[in-house]
Length: 283
Ligand code: MG
Image (tube, rainbow, N blue to C red):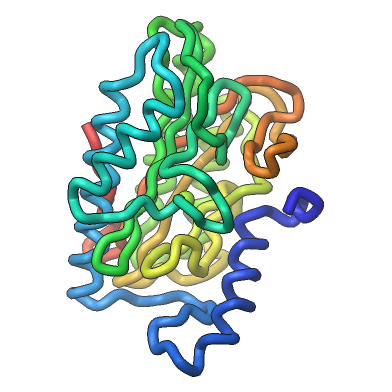
């Protein structure tokens, strides 16, 4: 996977899924063969259930973060909570990913594998959670301070979350994917951050990564039209340094190439006729 990362792992994953699904499309009516899916009212209700479980799990994780806790313990807390609702952790086994959540610390941007690492005062941790229930998926991420962190780290996290909300505000029916990316990028670049371009947001539904891709950069008025019934994940990854990324030898963990801090926030939202509706709200 690593050798392809310049093309963007998420786009590779979409390509692999398409190829895999094509083979089975004839015997499964629910196979995803690419393209934007528009959810029915019933499907949106299932998306809301999945999103609520993700939001609840993120709230619990946020309360659980403290110096000394390991990323593996956070993973167990999330796994147990997701399953307590009768849902399953979407990421477990996804293209071989070995855990329920991604846990990425400091210069790790996304896709960190939980394990024995204990969090230290001053770290920032990004936790990305997926839950599947009734066949539909919610996916969201937060960045959390471990104890007291530097002013720069605190500001990075606040600005990354604000850039997510700038993107969400732009996700209006009748607008286009490029409007979202332009809003996120505009907010981030004005504040001097590196905007990660090799990993992008995505459509979501029965599959974790559906069309369209939702980059954190773009041109207003360009790209796929946003229509009621679409569900997408917006997930800005902002760096204190440059946008360049590297993947560690575990073939999953994405880090900043220059070792600078990175923050990540993500929500799943539904496009409705009245505007974007966040499905993964948390406290
Ligand atoms: Mg996502």
